[in-house]
Amino acid sequence: MSSSSRFPTVLDAMEVVMLSNLVYGMKNCEPNDLPPEFPSYLRCEFYEEKSNDGTQVAVVRSDEKKYVAVVYAGTDSAIDVLYDTDLEAVRFGPKHDYLVENKHVKVYGGFNEQVFGDGLYARLLALVSDMILNQYPSYRLIVTGHSLGGANSILTSVAFAIALSPYNHVFVENISVASPRTGTEAFRKYANSLENLSIWRLVLKNDIVPRLPPSMYFWKHPGHTIQMNTNKILCYYLHYGDKVLEYAGVPFPWNDVPFLDPITGSLHHLIKAYIDYIQTRNQTINNETSFVISFVSTKDQLLGVQYDEWSYYNSEDESHNIELTINE
Image 1 (cartoon, rainbow, N blue to C red):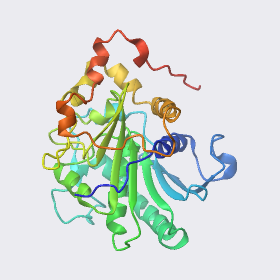
Image 2: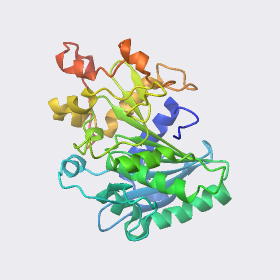
Image 3: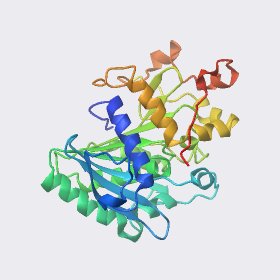
């Protein structure tokens, strides 16, 4: 199975949450219409909001940090959409032009339509492949997004990895923020097998959306889970672990605890909560090092190094409370 050559740094995490927040305020790439917080080191190359389903995506470039990034926005109705018990699984890719021969490689139909419907993916691939192959071949290719945008970023990353696989120098880095489950077990295995792709999913405390759709036995997470807890950050190898490699998967309470208090779980889902958490982490560790440097092992779990947010509800310590200031 594929695994990234390196763990994301805290600076990587800060960058993707900033980008994921930024795209919510975008309307186009015109300089006068960009959000006031749009960094001077970024250049907007592409922006589109689909009229039929509201999917928002931008392509930005940083010459200073040497990356090209594809960034999806989420939606306000994420939790309602993902609680729908009639979610349809469809074959991965454009309709009647599937990207994988295996008919069992399926994803949630809503995500698939948002990414591949109306030719959006084809337009993104044409632009991004030209930038990465011809204009900026030494730049990183990063794909990200928050919430449902995180799910769309994962599907796009897998598609990019397939399309760009003939080019040995191209590596697709997906670092998503609060992504829900995206596809079937066959899709998870396929995505994890791609050698030119890494998938890292940031999950803050008891954020409820990564635990959705609720049917965890059908809908699966590809890639590694970076679980950002109150007191520590834990990284779970391919989310479910690997007994042969002696890597632990997320413990069972990870799936259920957020539903004990869905209001708090919804607060943990806010992009501002992710920004605040990572900014605080950045102040306490070396910027040049990863904020996670190893996967949780099965031995670690035996020694008590586990996801511990379920104690949140029984603790008298108020330090876990998130103070949020919402800009009107």
